[in-house]
Amino acid sequence: MTSRTTGSFPAAALDWVAPERPGRVLAIGRASTAMASRLAGLGHQVVIADRSASAVRAAHHRYPGLRAVGAAADALPFAPCRFDQVLVAQGMHLLPPGLALDEFARVLAPGGRLTVLYTVRDDSVPWVRRLAAILRTYDPDAMTEGEELYSVAAVAASSHFPVVEHRAFRLWVPITRDGMLEMVANAPRIAALDPADADRLLDEVGGLYDTSARQPEPLLLPYSVLCWRATVDHSELTAALRPPEDGLQITL
Image (cartoon, rainbow, N blue to C red; front, side, top):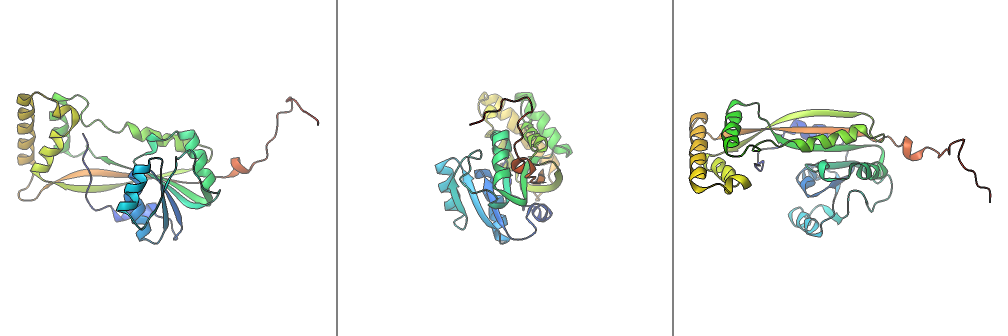
């Protein structure tokens, strides 16, 4: 089950993620466009890259001030050292890590940074845990997202990005009673329930909302904005090739 976050993006997270000086930013994938727009608002020159032509058109339509190009993350059509930052939001797990990280290192200028973001639900709040327990009665896999975060480990394992910094920021998203019921009802497995079971589930969810909210104020869904940043190390890309001493030597 997912919910589109609509709360204000934490200013502290934007300060931590944004390059210190206005520069050139490459945003990878359609999910990065919202953050790319925020960086453009700070004076950065932003390019959005997505392999889907429809995603490129949609990004250009929604954010006409940003340049959008059709390109795969593992085959970027840019000269070396072109960007000061590569940004990947909500999409690192969709990329081939070795090839993509090689390309990110190639297009980053010396001192440039790779930044990865994921906004995930924070289940530490008691009413959210109770909601998860209700949903798992009907769908054991409900509210169990988060496996995609393991993809960030590939950054730390890469020789191109030897030091990775991490920070987390809290984001609160208001949700009304109707909004919560709609969010639950639209979850794929919940939508496929027998009508009687679906009605029973929605009654339980509505009851949870009524006992948790301080009417007329909406409930606040808690999210964590997880941020990673790593400065590129070009030493592997610039090191001279040294064949092994026992290798075959060919003289022409």
